[in-house]
Image (cartoon, rainbow, N blue to C red; front, side, top):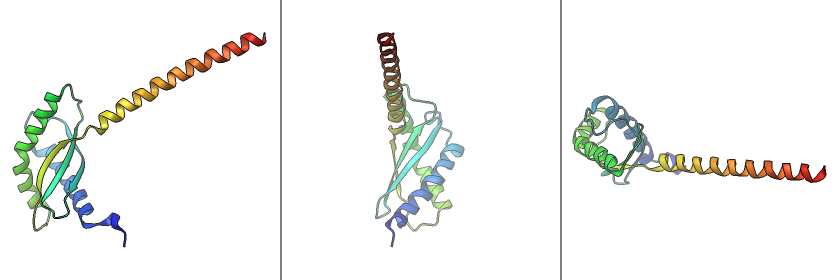
Amino acid sequence: MAREFSRTNRISQLVMRELAQMIQHEVSDPRVGLVTVSHVDVTSDMKYANVFVTRLNGVDSDKDVDECLQGLKRAAGYLRRNLAGRVELRNIPELRFRYDRSLERGFQMDELITKANKGLSTDTSSEVEDESGSTS
């Protein structure tokens, strides 16, 4: 039997989908802002759910991230109660919010790759000019 369709994975997907909708439509804390749920890890005993979030409007400092997480932590009880009404589970996991920096790291890696490719293209074009100049 395939382990990729385990119960914890299905519950993680369900919790992620419902939390994303609730945060977007029902949380009015200005500290939270435009937040998207990128991933949810539910423990095997279903007691805790690590909710990884990213901010769509960018992050200026770690203080912004801390304020966003404080706003989500403050709304965790409300979100958990509403989650219990939307999802039929015996135990609703305790929500623990974490900031997911993978999107920011991906943008940084993309910038580095772009810079490296620009450096290669200028090196390659200068080599082509040297080769064409030496054959003349």
